[in-house]
Image 1 (cartoon, one colour):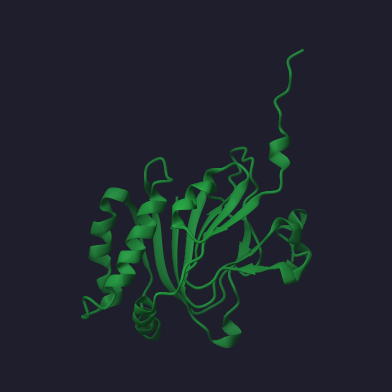
Image 2 (cartoon, rainbow, N blue to C red):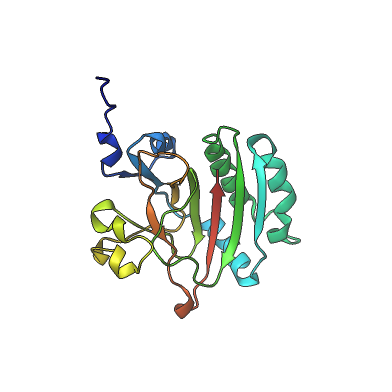
Amino acid sequence: MKALPDITFWFRNPKQIISDSWSERNVILESDVNLFSWKRKTNQQISSYLQHVVSSDKEPISFFTDVNDLEKWISEIRGIWDGENKTAGDAFWKDVFIVVRDFLTFSPSQSGTVILKVIHSNQCTKFHTDGYPLRLFTTYYGKGTEWLPEKALNRGALGKRNDQIVKNPFKIQRMETFEVGILKGELSDRMNPTPGIVHRSPEIEKTGEKRIILRVDI
């Protein structure tokens, strides 16, 4: 009789790795990790620039690129937010370039979709997983993405109400401003040994808050 493959690793609780070093990001590729998060300090120069962006309610930016064309794309589109002040956002756009460039190397084609936008309404506030291999998410301004450690959630309730999904609301985690998260998703057409990270956008409509987010999908 042919022995069956060991499938016990499919059912291990996924881990979330929080680090103060961007150089450790490759840990997201490990089979039992569904979130890598890089905690870093707020950059005051970038924050000052983004205060202008959020007050002017700039239009969203979205483009598909590969590593080789990324610098050219940023050079062309940054004027949408910079306006006539061509140097005020230098620190911000340099940071976006470095983070996106490094993340795109996880893609077999070294390419992905980059989205930058000002958010002033509730987005997806229900806890969920998404259908993508990897997504990078950074909130440069305002409240960050919320996520659930495995012990705090009921995966069998996904698709239902948050109060059914969340077993312990005190265990809800939130990324800080400037924190860079790499989130592992789930794809229905392939067997993934790691369940995707369960997350949601914070509610901001009632308070009138705004957010500025960077998202990259590969």
